[in-house]
Length: 351
Ligand code: AHG
Image 1 (cartoon, rainbow, N blue to C red):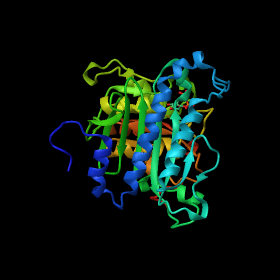
Image 2 (image 1 turned 180 degrees about the horizontal axis):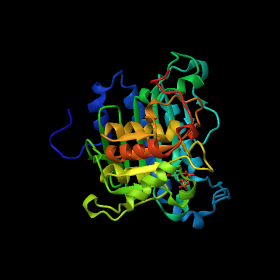
Image 3 (image 1 turned 45 degrees about the horizontal axis):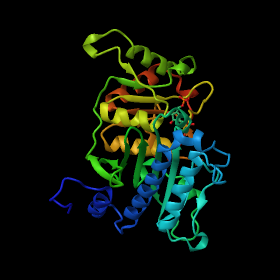
């Protein structure tokens, strides 16, 4: 029971309070989430200092103490890997920063979970002081003991037991779900704790924000072009034209749309025929979160969570956000895009 005598609920208290709701409650998933939140605080500290890099030394160079500077995405990767390795609940990690899966403890590994993560998404925005994020996805491993295998990672998004992100923005927030709603916690730097600030987050069914890199318009599938053109018409009754908001940092764009209502699209393009984003550590975790908040995520045709991954770094197109907006975009895709030109996947419904 969360303490009634004060309003403040920390992430640690919340996780423990909700532990009994986890499907396999043994405290390990709680520990894993705590490990992630500790690494997030360390990464937050460094991200906040990023503007000082020109004073302290460029990434790759040596600082005044003679220590070599690390790029922030490399630093973030190391912090999350160290946190996950130390707890013992995690058998291995698939990271955007590593070509191969990272396994912990070899044959002695008893961790029951595996994690897929993008330790610092949108890192090209750091130099210009724009919000970036961390995305994570947690599964129970399929093998029982010994080293985890690639097959432990190649699970449907619908098999995730938890997913979340941290947005390092004007304030730093951690948002996560364990399949029982979505809750958001804001870091209070004065006490160094994530505090419950956004309980039971729900995405509005509709919205008037769309987020897409419109510079790629000529390379978009016909369905996306027609959908976007329709959002731009002068139609006061339906609050059109809609507002375009695109930060170029998935976590930040997603977070805004989750709160205000909207759609984020990264479709296939002529230059990225399979899409740009990664299924396992970008699309799947965001899809679980949005669905838990009452929204929807598809690749334009199929539910993201039903796509069978065949590679840990597999790419995927993404249409995610308010359910009514995602549904409408899919209608356009069905009507105007040649499904034969879209990437094919095995889905859980077909297998
Ligand atoms: P990166 O981490 O290389 O900056 O990529 C960011 C991802 C995602 O966060 C963002 O929405 C998208 O790529 C932006 O891609 P474009 O620059 O092609 O719009």
